Image (cartoon, rainbow over all chains, first blue to last red; front, top):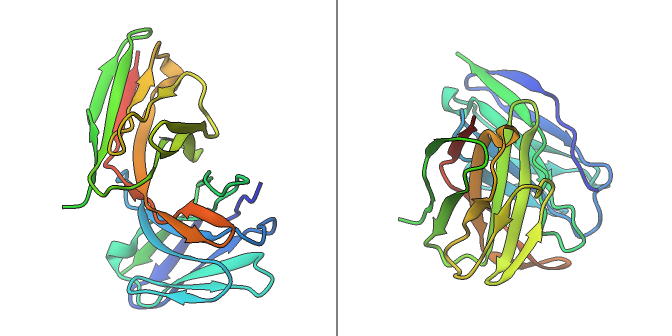
Length: 111
Length: 119
């Protein structure tokens, strides 16, 4: 199973970049890495996903190491509204249709 | 507005009384899924469906049933609820895209959650 490991919590100063790491050492060649976040008990919100190359969208950047065993989500200029639990996920069934969210990283953005 | 809706949002019930939590999406997504969230355990997948009449077990399917008779709806059924099913439940949907390795769900859109208490 391609499960993930994330630090339970992190702090970041407002306006600075938040770098959230994730280890997925058992990821297989066709499995994508997804990032979601959850604010309080709301439904999780999709952020970004990638396979091999680094990706960027309006919310964040995703850096995947060359061996694909780890990745980093970067929020370039963290705001107080970015305080949330961030989940790094890989799909893990043979068909890539099952998802294990784990417990994520609780990010606190400090004023 | 594109969205996933769940009903009810809050439910308190008693052990053994059958209940259904409805989930509906208006984005014509093929993939739908149910998760439960418990303190310290994160989100765990209960069941998922790749399309109409196609459902599969996730991590924690015991005590739950689902059906997918229409593309937009994916109800979660608890035939005989027990207190250990007290949890926060989320429904999600996703388009299926042609990813490396074959068609797979992509970004998932989540509903607002249903907080269930079984006494």
